Image (cartoon, rainbow, N blue to C red; front, side):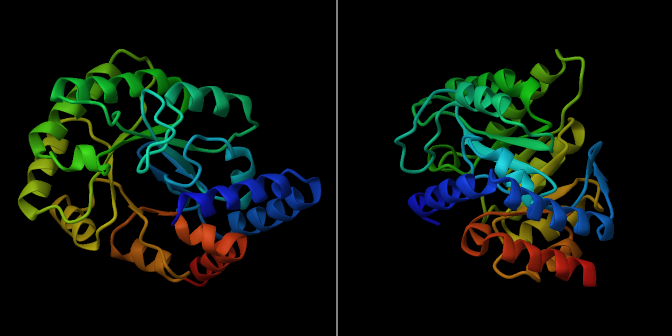
Length: 280
């Protein structure tokens, strides 16, 4: 999904979504689905619906108040980098400080996830680890759970289980300094080998990793089977039609995030997803 069309979608919806009549219509549909679809508790958080809005749409948290009106179980913003890299072709982030300021200004009482990454300029493992930790530390009080995103090319090109473990170790040590516990999930790029998945899974078992965000059916099936469903899994970026959500939930995902398909189909598409879930 082109960034330009996503921005247009968000801007149009921000104008319409803040109108009282439109907000009332959204609330009507949200309440209806909320009655039929049961709540689900995952890593200590109660989700009203398993359908969330994924990262790469509202990257900087500018529209969470409007998007929450559609009835998502949670909203994920990002990827967010420690420093501003707004003109970056892959991750155009305004920076973590902008995001926490912006989301604090907007009326929003839903579940907020922040997708975190390192700056493109991180030139060494030490800098990469520091960047994830800085973003996590600054954001800790402003989100309900966090996703360490390893998809951007400058990190995925050198990714290995050891680097993931070192990044996660640093973040998890920082989490120990806070009184309130917040879940940390790993977002893995597609196409990882079974051997790499097994090493990451082994590390996650021994540490307090709370779950995974995956965009690969084989990875979902492998982690679900190897962990006997112990680790919560969020499926991201795999929804093309409304029946895909229920299929992914049956496949082993606990939550499903939609992204470009929501931009293409809007509220009507989301309504079709909920109708499909209600039939299940």
